Length: 367
Image (cartoon, rainbow, N blue to C red; front, side):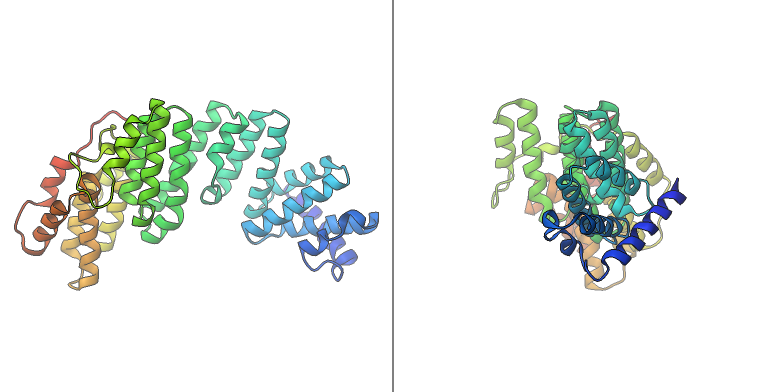
């Protein structure tokens, strides 16, 4: 099958080269004036765009080529050709073409009322490129994908988030923060609201300062959906008002600790971990935040502080990692100041002991 697809792609490229290499210099050029072209030029343009899709080197170029091919086939009334081409792209080795094709096929299946078929395509698209699949949770639910497919999608998304959690700040910003909203939305659609709120907690603990407000807003949406009124959501938003030190603990520390299979595996792995390098400790800290274990995260962060080079920048990175969960949980500058004083002089309460009092979560959450 793959050999046949490779031959077809080569033929398409050859035809495009023979019939329109000079004529079509881009996908947009091939699309220009398509409806008024001769049948021969239309065929050459379709071949050119098909070749561009199969050889795409980015998600954007693949999406553009597949979208253009859809418009061309629709103009000729040949939806069968479009779907056949997309199936070939979907089974090819080009991840960019495969993702774009499966997204298009999902839309076609949904239009026919085939929720299971649309769900299969969206799941395949997600497996190809989970980080590039914003909006996939809403599409899965809108298409009527079966529950089994939704659960598989959740596993794929969580695996993607886990791989980013311990890979450093850049991966958190470029990968984790794209995937986590999809996880929260999918859980909310599934009616697992406490689990969705716990994922928002993880988002706030692990995400960047820039995404903190997005996590707050999404958690308020989940509360409103769960309660069908604004009471708890408005109180939660008020807790996060700027310039105010709230009473009590962050409400997102009330839902039980996540205990899905991926979290259980990660916590078991972290229990055996014994990093000797400060960067490895910070990586383990990020993994512990994702594992919904802020107590352990603080332990790794304190260890990183002890092992870090004696320079301001390195020590500050570690100190920030130690203080972050306390500030998220309390929003009290005095608590953060106490943590900083201990790290600077040894006076006050050890952050590891303090974590046991402030950051301990109830057990029994997730699946």
